[in-house]
Length: 120
View 1 (cartoon, rainbow, N blue to C red):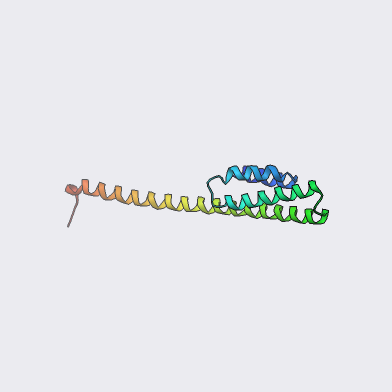
View 2: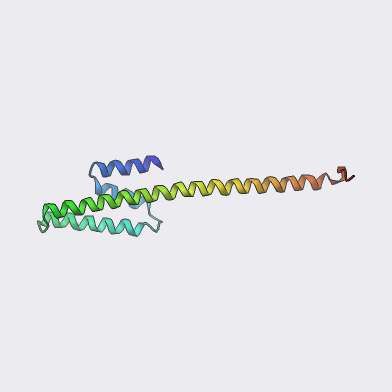
């Protein structure tokens, strides 16, 4: 995942926002964050159209693109922290399941060997 996150950041760094939005869209295909990415993509398309048509000043377009860039970076940071949290939760659940399985195995072993137990 770090490689993908790094790649997205590199695209943003190189001002390749359209590509970053497309890659992020693929990544978030089944995520609730997809709507946020779609909104950013729409804003980016709208500002690009306004630039082409000359209906927006350079300062306004720069401001909007910087806002989109920052929002993309924040979205990527949120995804990254969610993945880290998910990985920790999965590890904790795995450890808990392993402990329970081990405890159950011990109980089964003890029941199977009850005739050899010393109760004195």
